[in-house]
Length: 372
Ligand SMILES: *[C@@H]1O[C@H](CO)[C@@H](O)[C@H](O)[C@H]1NC(C)=O
Ligand SMILES: *[C@@H]1O[C@H](CO)[C@@H](O)[C@H](O)[C@H]1NC(C)=O
Image (cartoon, rainbow, N blue to C red; front, side):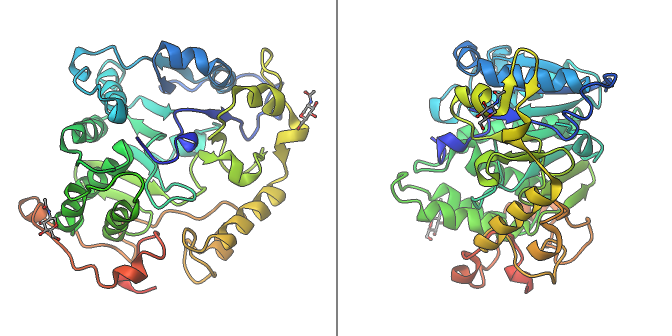
């Protein structure tokens, strides 16, 4: 089980795009080597027909490939079949499937004009969940490289290391996979907390303490350059997917996320987002707003939730500086505040001292250990 199933990306999404209407009459551009990948079994595919159709509309408009995978394609992935961590099978399947695709093929995995993110160039792209402390597990973008396939496979394998208590399935695990990938200090401390998770979902405190440990270790959202590849973690609301509800289900043709997830009810696709789904026509009056209006909404959201969005304008990712224009960028690889990295030999035994865990638990943007 994962937290708040209704908010999960894979279960429901809806896509919109900057340029959706503007470009409708123009020639379709074709982007080779880019695919929208949806993973779900046949009952999932039946249930989310409308959402899948809306993704097809999107992919067609932008010249992306569209792939439906059921997660039963590869024998090697059948091991990962536990109900509560079934997404391990998804990551395993995407990893194996990438092996059959051209090198550097980019897969936007769901659950856009996603050009902005495609052009970003990192092997693995993840983002911080909107009003949760974790890194989001449901939606990600991967380039077909050994680095990415290895990342997905290591993630899937956490299926065998999951603790007895509530750990939010692949969402709890991805925190540690990112730590391993970045080799940031503190793995032993956080991994111990993970192994020690014994409480059920009715007591989430140990889980959040664990998540905060990992967020402290990983630090602010950043474009990491590593010897074997690159990983970008995007700040909240800056990736191509967002929880539509928090933005009044609005989208803009110019800025902001292009997919909405958390749209549980398939009827909303036809009653709110699209006026004619068969023809891929968006209901502009209900959905589309100006960049300024969407920006105001995002800033207001950020100001209402200071535990998720750093306030003020003194830092690069501070809400007042960048939220209105959706330009809160990940830090550069070398930019401070930067967590310490440790060598491979010492990594597993590198703990760290959680300086002030009560203080650090108040937020999850990851730099309380390095001063504000
Ligand atoms: C669990 O917590 C205890 C006490 O904090 C600690 O000593 C131990 O190393 C942790 N890990 C495991 C796997 O028990
Ligand atoms: C567009 O959505 C609104 C609800 O937001 C609805 O009242 C209206 O009928 C829809 N328009 C069409 C053409 O479906």
